[in-house]
Length: 499
Image 1 (tube, rainbow, N blue to C red):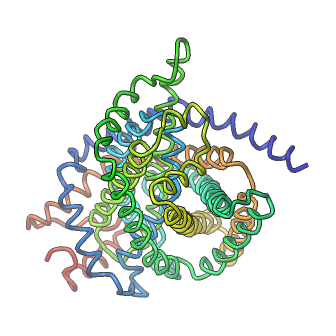
Image 2: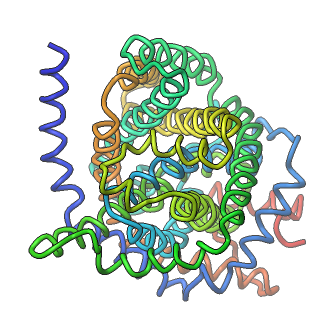
């Protein structure tokens, strides 16, 4: 019975996935990033230094601080929740899966998606803060569904975006849980369904305890875990890569050579494999940095900051850190220290290969390390996406009554936790594919809106930097006059951004 259910789900997903990740969506992702890059005058390059100055320094200053109950969570807590949603198994196992199925060239397309994704994510955050609304419990509520409904004025598409966000939340948590159960089961040398099920139940129980506390508890937990796991991962990656320094050049050569010509393909399969390289790279890139999905903006919108552009610059750093640093380190670890060609030829499995990379480089310590790093990456991602799904549910049912919205959120959380358990025992490929499908669906309404509101992003950006130069122009802080005036007074009171 279980096998038939899985087979049915697999067939349905395969059909949807081939449609969702067809060339139209890939062109839409790249096209939107290109348009926003032009309209913001290559902001991800011009203001890259400003992004670091607006993120690293405030991060250090806000560590240990708590957000104002009326103003929201701190910038660092909002960023930690957002980065925990993006830095997950996609950065380790996802990169491995992309290379194993699309060759090293897939990494190149991850970089391409990230370059444009930096300004796409920036734009999402700018619009998210500009069109966010007040939320009694968490300070503010925002996301793609809000700026689609209130900015674009297409409420029906906002509801569609909310439904897709809920589905993507379930898909993303499923992929992450699947990697936790797969990693720990492999470490325990027991790949049975019973062991994976027990792991799934344990993860679901921990998630249930934390998500009851909402964004503040999630932000607090992720603010502690994200720095630790990121630093540990990068230290191990640098040691492994520079221990094989002579192979760094050939690794980059393989990435660029295979980006346009996948040598493992032959004859009539060349065209198909070229498409696979691009699609796998794009899909894994979007899965990893989430630029274009309109997901992390839900967390950023809860930030206490009043300046949309200031929070938008976090988005630039977020994608850069996620893909150009973390994903690239993962790729180089595999390409520099393993026989990647042999692994591809043998049809190696992604989770097992990821563990093998660490065990080959660091022995037992490496196995233990990856058994800690990977579950932590995945766990914090599951936490972040529970919040995204919760906010989408609130938006979807807010038109009925506050009581109906609260009940709907409870139902979503229960379903979310139960599906965490179910996803722990499905195959790795199915978990990836379901998440890819839902991510692709989620991106479409968001990208359409970003194209339509690209002019608004440009105006808000120009307004911010005019004021930074000392020009006397009225701040564009919120789309709603009363909130805009309130935020303007806040800026005057604490001189938040003009110091």
